[in-house]
Amino acid sequence: MCCVSVFERYKSYSPYDMKESIRKEVKGDLEKSFLTLVECFENKQLYFANRLYEAMKSKGAKEKVVTRIMVSRCEVDLMKIRTEFRRQYKKSLYQTIAEHTKGDYQKALLGLCGGDD
Image (cartoon, rainbow, N blue to C red; front, side, top):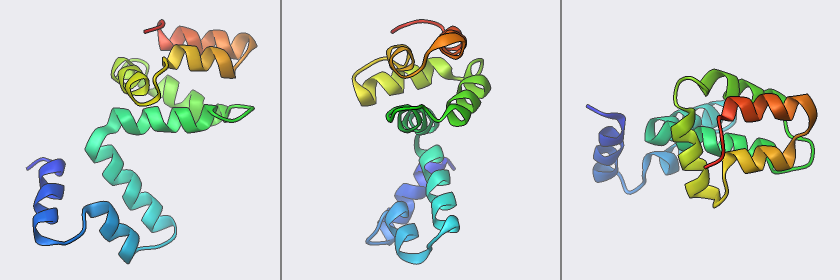
């Protein structure tokens, strides 16, 4: 049974969805961990798109987060992450990287990104 189906079935038995139940019942690092798992089960590519956006939206991109995601996902599902990023934020991941990074780091990330959408 798919995780999303499990979440739908849970909702039919509970007045709350899975995320609401976690927020009500668990706090701290365990809450954050469970919510992350649910987000990944629901839409892994959107989860990574959100993490990239959050890491780059302020001045001085959180380089470790961006690098870890870009390197680990570039050959797996980066095209799908790029699609989710554009759908969610109305701009391309490539464009966002170009705006929030510079120098050799920017060149490396843009190379991993593989082009503008």
